Image (cartoon, rainbow, N blue to C red):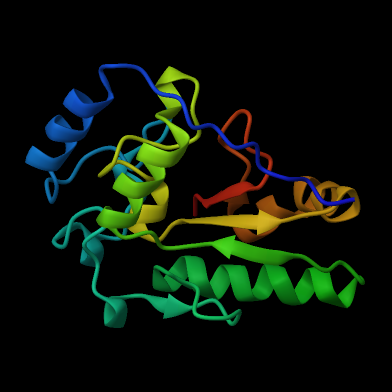
Amino acid sequence: MTIHRPEVREFSPTFESALVAAQSSVGAPRAASGVPGTKSARVPAELLRFGNGKIPKDALSSIGIGQHRLSTRAAVAFRSLHAAAAAEGINFGVTDSYRDYDSQVDLAKRKGLYSEGGLAARPGTSDHGWGLAVDLDLDAKALAWMRANAGKFGFVEDVPRESWHWTFHS
């Protein structure tokens, strides 16, 4: 059984003003996510100078699956997590990792803002834009394994309503 992400296409009339506000402040260091409880202190110092969603490819590292990339410490931790899961017969896919700013805008348009019942952080505030978050394709067994073990590798399930979203917190 695969846990699928629901599609949310509706958003409030204030969406465009939220995008304009986000676009005007892109590049400024700030909280790493549109979800309460995350802190910009988690963002690697070497990435803060680029801004959320503006990190060049060569400043990120491969997670060892497809073209997916994260900040270096998160990528190293993820590769260890994935290897540990595989060693226990747990398999899962990766559907998203680092997300540039334009991709964040597109996702917010398609799925709505999280703060308004949708599934996207306000563009320029996503943990994906700092290279700290992965979205996984998990079946029930893999989700149970992640919940029991991901913390050992620094990953937490920190977004309510999104069991596929895991953020690096170490």
